[in-house]
Length: 126
Ligand SMILES: NC(=O)C1=CN([C@@H]2O[C@H](COP(=O)(O)OP(=O)(O)OC[C@H]3O[C@@H](n4cnc5c(N)ncnc54)[C@H](O)[C@@H]3O)[C@@H](O)[C@H]2O)C=CC1
Ligand SMILES: CCCCCC(=O)/C=C/[C@H]1C=CC(=O)[C@@H]1CCCCCCC(=O)O
Image 1: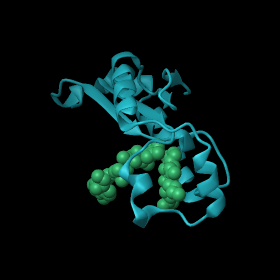
Image 2: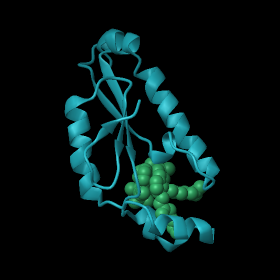
Image 3: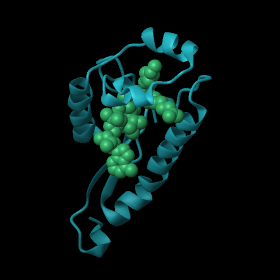
């Protein structure tokens, strides 16, 4: 993909999460991994890299989304406080995330990150 290696350039969309920039007491290892995705996006997508390689790197940060991750019993979290917390969140469908991700693809600059939460308008957060 890299232009300096005979590629045509392109776009990488990293999947972070609201937990890539927002912090609470739940799932700390997961939150740490999503902060890493954000740092990776910002560094790899730095304008200097973009100018040299022609590869745009962006991150999306979905909020609570109705996927198998959250309904598969094997992944159900036993922390009852977290379960109660999740019930109060602004859930969205996978389709809403897909539509928003297309908008990110069409508009985002390299090294940026975008909140996609509660099926609302996308919002740049990095
Ligand atoms: N569901 C949610 O509320 C949110 C999810 N995310 C992120 O979205 C991404 C996708 O998650 P969901 O669609 O929710 O989960 P999911 O469980 O529905 O999908 C995850 C997919 O990853 C595949 N997978 C797992 N390990 C793999 C491996 N080693 N190599 C290749 N594929 C592998 C699984 O087979 C599955 O198809 C994850 O990075 C998750 O952290 C971010 C924010 C919110
Ligand atoms: C009671 C089941 C709770 C399942 C988690 C949930 O409701 C969804 C949370 C999502 C909101 C934003 C995210 O990025 C979330 C995924 C959280 C996955 C937690 C994985 C925990 C772990 O294995 O460390």
